Image (cartoon, rainbow, N blue to C red; front, top):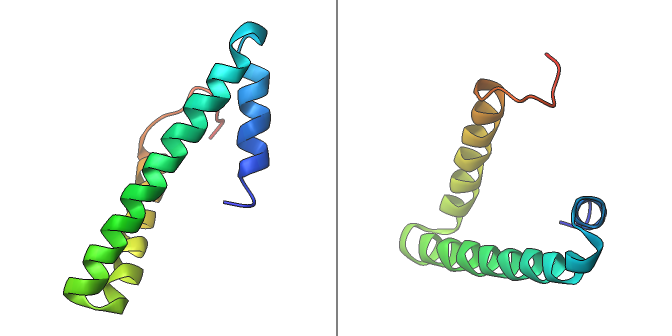
Length: 80
């Protein structure tokens, strides 16, 4: 998160219209907070029910799905 937070803030500042920039940052931070809350709750459920290693395995599976999705879904901004 520390590596990407500044980049995401710059991207929001660059793409949001000047009069809506504050709202864009608020919505971004709200969605980030909700995502972190859900991720923490999910990790807690896995840890309590399946053990500590299950959180690592779930992270690996999510990472693999993301990498496969990035490779399979075409992007107009990316050159192959």
